[in-house]
Length: 209
Ligand SMILES: Cc1cc2nc3c(=O)[nH]c(=O)nc-3n(C[C@H](O)[C@H](O)[C@H](O)COP(=O)(O)O)c2cc1C
Image 1 (spheres, rainbow, N blue to C red):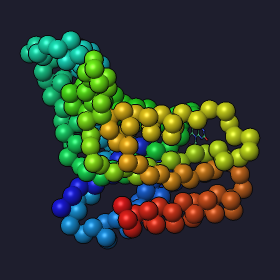
Image 2: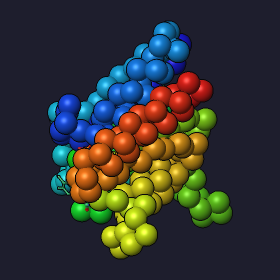
Image 3: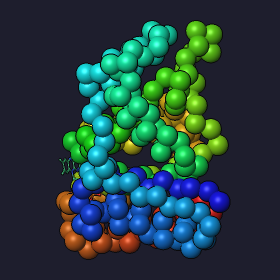
């Protein structure tokens, strides 16, 4: 029995295109893996611990190779809890909107909690940085209001490029993705057509995930 963690980075619930496509994926996956646990985490509903003050200081304590003083421990335990939940899964599904050419701030907050030395990546002067999450699969749905397949797309794309890089940094290199776009601009027929195509593609990938 394995565990799939389904991370939703949109607050738009049933209006969210990334969640609609990811739901279709999870539906097919769950039917094919009846013994697996599927845990859903909506980042706009989850009470993520703050990553400031003592928690950031605690990260520097680790980077400096020291033990956490008592004052930092409580803040660090809250960060560890988020990491433990993430690492308890072997497979991940991420529903990710594009916000201002990048990812929503709650997903960035989640990443800032997860990407920690000694937990999800290691550093060695010889081997440099190495991701610590091994043998795990990731499926990402990217949603974009604009159309980046257009021959003249908007100039910035820091959504997929950033997320793929940071996932790879912690060892999550076995990734597949589907992009649903445009979800806002363009005529309605095109938007519906692209949504249906993304759902079909997601369902297809789920069969062998
Ligand atoms: C704060 C905010 C910023 C956005 N910025 C962009 C953007 O830079 N480029 C774009 O193509 N769409 C942008 N959009 C539109 C969303 O990408 C689009 O609505 C997408 O479908 C959101 O994903 P969701 O439907 O899963 O919530 C933005 C939307 C919001 C709310």
